[in-house]
Amino acid sequence: MTSPTVTVIVPGRDVGAFVDDALASLRAQTRGDFRVILVDDASRDRTAEVFAEVAAADPRFQLLRHEVARGLGASRNEALERVETPFVGFFDADDVMTPHALESLVGSLEHSGSEVAVGAYVRLRADAAGHYSPGVVQPWVAASTTPARRGTTLAEHPDVSGNIVAWSKVSRTELWRREHLRFTEERAYEDQVVAQQLYVSARGIDVLPDVVVQWRERADGTSITQRRHAVPVLQDYLDGMRGGLAVLDAGEHAAAARSRVRLILGMDVPALVRVAEHHPDDEYRRLLGAFTRDLSERAERDGIALDADSAALRAAALAW
Image (cartoon, rainbow, N blue to C red; front, side):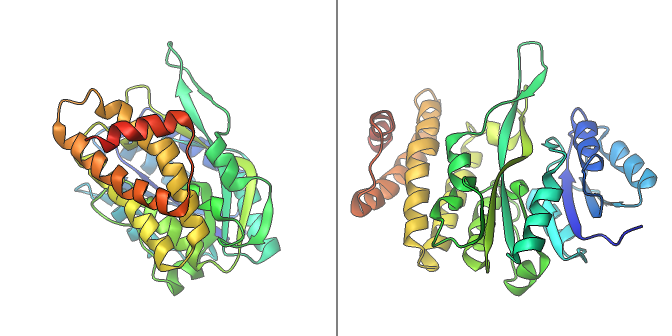
């Protein structure tokens, strides 16, 4: 068997309804020189069983199991310690990887010598009957990955800072070791900070407009990004965005920070305002109002303009 070139880290907890599709999409990759580390984070459903069956049937898959749930960040960090391949990527066990994803991302890095390759992604949404189908590439995703570039930098392409998910990228393992990069643990939105650390530290970034992942928006609303109505999740979300901006500020990447502020105020804040308007807990509005005031001051100082709809929703948050 060919020596593996890339390790894909796949944490999962209670994703039994989707894990078959996720692992099938990995096994169907057009590039087969990969290794997969499956991390069962104390699942209470069939996730553990499916992980074990695939690991037993395919030598490219290795299984780690937790008796007590530790979360996405800790699961990814544990697996990172075991990576021996030149490249590493991440994948969530309820999503779908497109067939050419590893071929495109790893191949780009091999050709360019860059340290991070970033691909596009789409949402996978359910219809009324519960059948999932992929949507289109959203504008902020397209801005981060279009047009294709090889060997670019954060300074040259600041909009890449808007691609903050862990699973749309492949990077050189050496970059993680050299910069001592790890995911935040015991918090949601653990990939916001590390994504900006990758961009700031990388000696070359490749961006690809190819869709590499279909990101599932679960019909039952149980994924972490669908639970932002909970005050603790909102706190983690806001802290993640603040932390990512702090990385860009510390690295003196002003253009990337402006791009990120514009995107947060234009997309994240309006969506949260719509939740806050009907939320039963005033603490939700207080947290969002304070966050929005901080970012609005930055936007005014830096001359960042917003469209009329976003500005109106931001004004509502400023009143809290």
